[in-house]
Length: 141
Image (cartoon, rainbow, N blue to C red; front, side, top):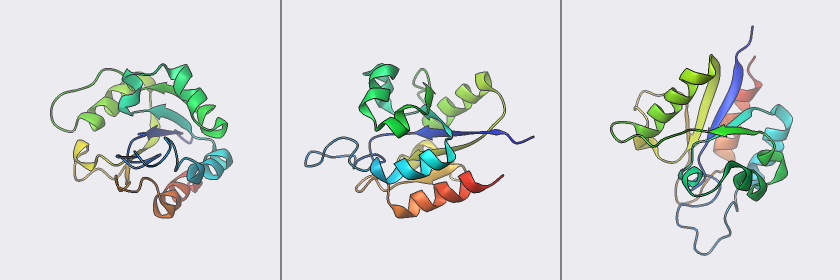
């Protein structure tokens, strides 16, 4: 039996550059839309935006294709080594077995050996390179 595919999605440095003063929020989200529509993985928000916006507001702020795939968000922030990775592990502990990836620019929040991180450049956000990595993972059965 195939495990469900879960995508842990960061916003800053992924859906727009980390310092996006000259760009609109989610300016890079369009690069993800077609891939996510085609494969429809379940999305869990791992972005710090989860602390300042309700899940409903986040779903409505994103393109519909992406927003409708969001099933939840990681919970409390963890202080310590590899916090984003630990937050994901906590989420998975309550969720059950899943094949997961994290689309994130904060590589220092993951162990160096973590093969589940699809790393974005915080200065650009997601590019075709990460979209291709995502497609390859989602296309695996």
